[in-house]
Length: 82
Ligand SMILES: [Zn+2]
Image 1 (cartoon, rainbow, N blue to C red):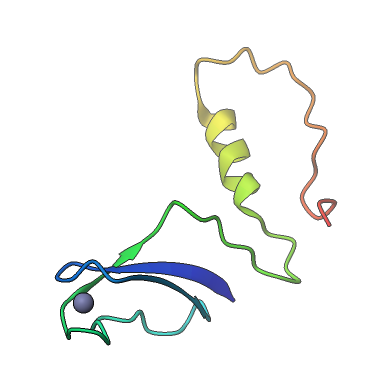
Image 2 (image 1 turned 90 degrees about the vertical axis):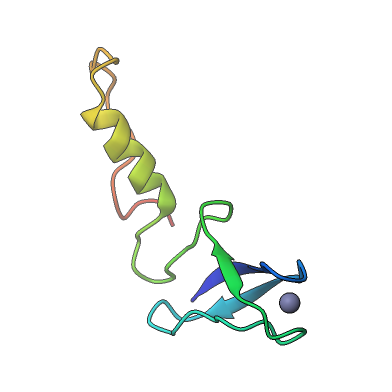
């Protein structure tokens, strides 16, 4: 489950909703029938029970980055974050 934020492009109606990852995104505003825009990136989502967290993304991006020296020990291991 993950929290998705939606905002209506027409009337500005904003709300959050818990949905399964596989669930279809909402598209129609229930207030005015306008187009809904799903806001992603503001709220990290957590997949409970999998050990997969948004922080994994950050770490991978750092690892691939060329700006760092890369000598820092990786103290966090996947799966130990619970
Ligand atoms: Zn609306």
